[in-house]
Length: 464
Ligand code: 4AD
Image (tube, rainbow, N blue to C red; front, side, top):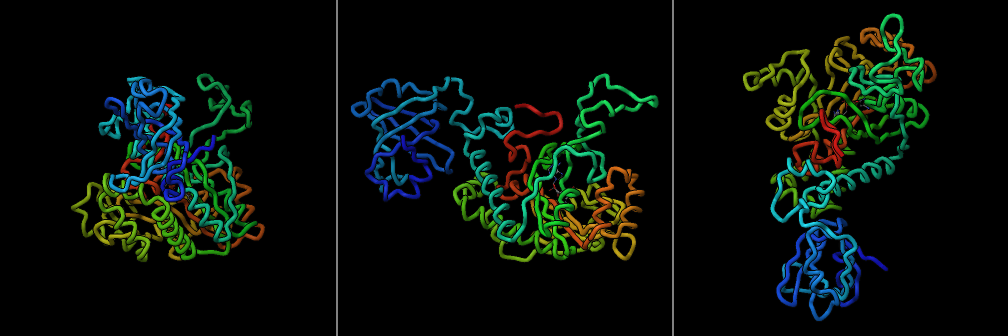
């Protein structure tokens, strides 16, 4: 059987007109009257479905087909007929309809509009709805665009480990990986868990970032990126935090903070443009039903320069508006979502880089600035989301790095290899992490991270 995807029917309509085609998909709607019936069939290859027309005098199993429930999986062979007068440009006049998988009458996805909250409870079926079908196609296109961008720019794609013995962010928000009995682990005399009997013979966790290992690879390949799953045991019940998410982390040798920002801006624009060009129907759907300003906003981002302020300047702006915020700001405080939104939505109206944060609120590996108070950090904030990228120039001076590790109470023994990079040809270098789900939220206007992850893991949720 030669199967034609529905997307091909749309891209090659003229060529296929009058020809026999076979399409495979799932029934969205089905209705019939007397000797004639209509099925709206979707196969996920594009936003649109195809209308199947079936007639009693043309297919042998007409009565059985009329009894099919929504959600059934069909293989349909028929003629592609142009319908210039109708809403859709063509339909398929079926010669054969085979029900490969029947669906029960209690199929949860009926024609009415379901709430996103309800659809989260059926994550195994929601990819068959318009919203999720579009969201996960955009997700796929964005992932491809990222690889394409980095490969076109000479980056090597590296795979960093998911199980790790070090805490990159030093924030202690890691999931422990162990083969020890969780309820009754062996303990040392001082009462602490004895990991010498564990599979790895030490305490290990799921990675919060591939950065430290990416730095090793950058010191061999010059320009690298990772793109993989990342895990954080943050107890944040927010719309933009997940316990398992994907992160893109480029790392560039012989580069400073400015180079880092240039790369981030070029990447963002490339990915947005690619997705708008390749998923126009999906984006149009989001623009109509999820976020009315989406297309204008994305177009503006591609065509304008990102803004840039230092943290100190940002605090000055925010302080003048402290009465508007639940969390009041002062120099030294971390920016909350409300501040990030205010800066991007009210002050700049576009993506904004915020640089040079106080060293106390950023990670140990960020390069200390000459003022001794701030580090060469950069966050990219975007309207609607807030922080989408976090990055920095890395500390390449070993004494300062060791001092910073002491301040963060990190055990140097766990980072001997990271320190070695500074001993053996360490260069100036920089990188960043882009939260992939936040990017997909930005591309679709979807407000909750649970709706851009096929099977979200958040506090208290690991269903499916
Ligand atoms: O700012 P973060 O913590 O930076 C790092 O992990 C660096 N090591 C990256 C690097 O320089 N290579 O995280 C980077 C981005 C954030 O800006 C955010 O978009 C995303 O990762 N992120 C999350 N996304 C979803 N759920 C969470 N719990 C996230 N935590 C961070």
